[in-house]
Length: 327
Image (cartoon, rainbow, N blue to C red):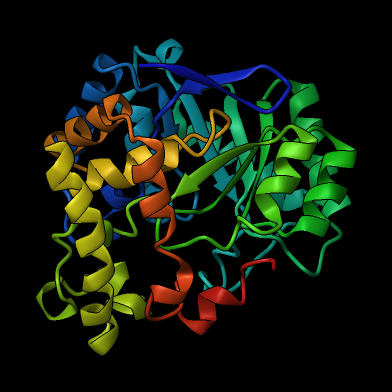
């Protein structure tokens, strides 16, 4: 597996990471034994970059990753995130990034992960009630203490990225980016490249939709996060299937899967980009990893580039979650 650099501070990771959120039953039931086997298989295949967060579960995803990496910690680069108020009844709609919470969550995440340092520590969502200089100042103190190695932001807007980076170098911005979610292209991607910040796209497969085999909502399990996704709902689902047919057409020509085409497109958008497709099963992990060997021609890239957001039906989040995106 090729290695890529995130930021200018020395963070090097596999070109493809593994998003672990789905192992916390976010997309229906999961099997811990298979999840752990998937993490171990990732290491065997050269994937060393694992993404989790305090809020996934909450808590249980960090614990699972820590368990899976017992005796293998030195092989892994662990990224985790803080920033939601888990004491709130609306924990996914309430953010909290006061410095005291930054320190508290870091210590708790270290305990759950079973490690004495976090490789990449992200602010999960910008807290509009706390100047980002204060939050990043606390994160920088964790670097001084040796508890954190590198800093990141998630779904931050241009102004806050600049302000944060002025306090301490930001190594990575994690944001949604895929064939059907291109909001970063006009302003954010040029900015992070100007500042020397790497990009970590989550949901590069559109929560499974871009694989061409995404389920309709009525066949998903209760509690599946996609039940709140407007792009999976009603007429939006049917309209978006037409977009996926374009991806599948390229896949048939290349004799690979639609998922591999979607990932190859993201990977070829720049060597400062490290997507983190999520899965909880080894067979899908192996399919995703194989995408790193798929090369798209300039014509194929142009064909896929033409799939613009204007063709996508529905916003990427319901209003509750869109309010947390700093744009």
